Length: 119
Image 1 (cartoon, rainbow, N blue to C red):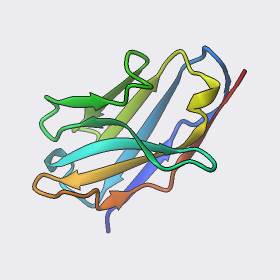
Image 2: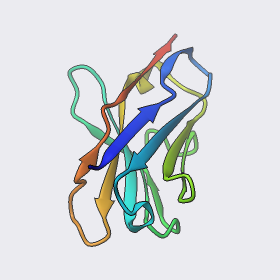
Image 3: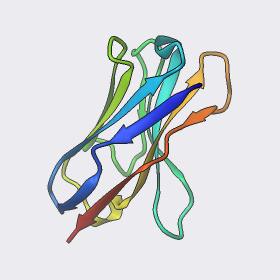
């Protein structure tokens, strides 16, 4: 079955950096668009960044543009989120998700990893 497993979260101070990883299995990784979402307590889930299956197109939420970078390594079936200049507002559970090439929704989700940024 398809599994997405996030890692790399933790507790850091404002201004620090973290790199999240999401290892996928059970799917043809290179055929999927991948994304990172986050959800803070009491808030809706938010799309943070997205990368196309072809690795050509990326999208970032305005709140993270210039600070976060999404990338993928198809040889390792892994997607990354490099986060820099972290702010307390970045505190959330971060989820990776995968969407098939012709699909409109993200069919597969990881279990999430907690990122906490202290001021």
